[in-house]
Length: 250
Image (cartoon, rainbow, N blue to C red):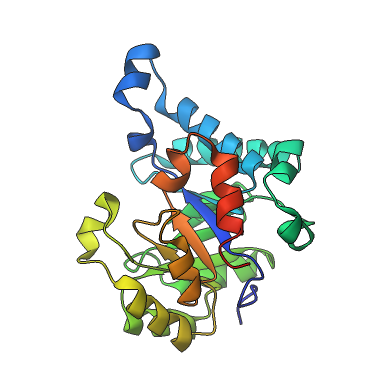
C-alpha cells in the first residue's frame, strides 16, 4: 500500500533536474570556466527555498560517485533551505496549514544504490529499470519505512501494473508536447491523464510540457501533482511560480 494519500489537498510539486539544459549560452559566456553541477545546485537550493515538495536528481550520465556527491549536497541544501523564510513566503495563507510540516524530499532517478546510501527520500524508476518489487525488497531489508518508490508510466496498462507492484506514486506523461520526452511518443493529453487518475488509487503526477497555463487542467483531470524540468529550472521568479501552482486547485 502506498505511503502517500490521494488526493493531495494541494498539488505536489516536483522539480526534475537536468544539468545539461541549465547552462544557457549567456551563463556559459558569463561564467567561464563554468561548472554545470554548481549551477544546478543553485537551482536546487532555490527550489527548496521556494517551497517545491520534491526534487528528483535525474542525471543519468553521472558516475555512481558523482551522483552520490550531487545527491548528498542536494539533501544538505534542501534541509537548510526548506524551512527558511523564503519557503514560508512561497506558501499562500490558503495552503500554509497544509504545508505546516513542509520539507523538500530528495528523490534519485534510477540509482537505488545511491538513494539508499545517501539516505535520500526515495527512488524514481523508469519503466525499463529495476523492477519495483525488487526495490521494495531492498528497502524493507534496510528498514526504510519513509522511503518512497515511484515509477514513470506512459500508458494505462503500465500504470495499472505499477499499482499492482505496490509503488507509492506514478509519473504519467508526456501530457503535452515537450522536447525532453520526444522519445516517449506523442503527447498523451488530458483525457488519458484523467483515465489513469481514475484507474489507479495512487497519487499521479503529470509530467511533460507542464506550464502555468495548463497546470489547472492537469489537476482538474485528477492529477495529485505536477512534475517538470523547465517550469522550475528556467523560472526567473521561482517563488511566484510555486505560489501560482499552489492556487490551481483552490
